[in-house]
Amino acid sequence: MNMTGLPPALPAGGNDMCPPKLGDIAPDFTARTTQGSLTFSDLRGSWVLLFSHPADFTPVCTSEFIAFARHADAFAEIGCELVGLSIDSLPSHLAWLEAIRSCFGINIPFPVIEDPSMVIARAYGMLDENAESSATIRGVYVVDTDGVIRAINWYPASIGRSIEELLRVVKALQTVDRDGVMTPEGWQPGGDVVLTGPVTQDEVTSAGPAWFFQYKQAKKK
Ligand code: BEZ
Image 1 (cartoon, rainbow, N blue to C red):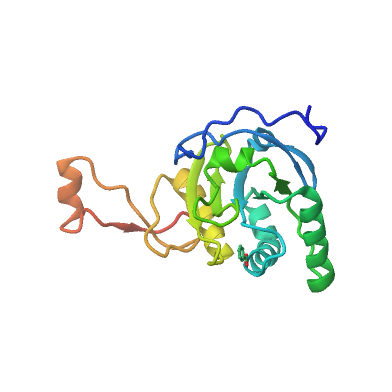
Image 2: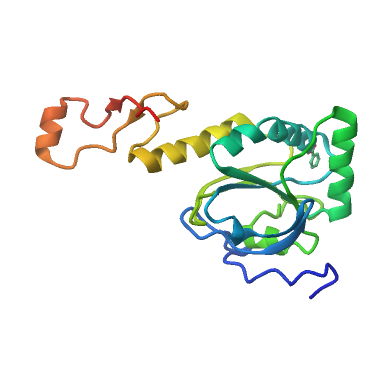
């Protein structure tokens, strides 16, 4: 046990010299959050969007949290849990979420992890080496129902993320898994997908000259 009263974080799979990559199992941990203790591996069975932010009480992060809250139902509809994280303390997180509620009337419905010891940020390679303070970058890790990291996205502190785009990425991954296809540039849910490509000479011949680029109607859900 440590000062938080929780067991120390479980051994993690990555570190800041060698952050986890696509296809790796997401490093596990147990941490305090604004909604109680969370053991990350307990979320297996759901998709998870784990995202870090540089600091509480900052304008870009506040804009992102408001957008995440507004899209929370859309993430819930596709079985995707939202989990926030920064190196700020739990009291700081609680004060910031309460300020967002009282100033903007917006309740943040997902847990926000405190990581003052930076154990989790290190395990995911989220620490911004170039920042003046030990802030985390705007990291996003999309983790599938088996705990595998399926998408990673890193933005600098100065650029707010598009939450619509993150929702689109999770929907695209779910479509790829469900239908065995791929999604083209700018794909939107329900839009045409692309085939993975022929694997025999006969398939190439019957597909015609553009055999390497074939659209297909999306399956109806
Ligand atoms: C922001 O979210 O606005 C922010 C984060 C880190 C440094 C400066 C601004």
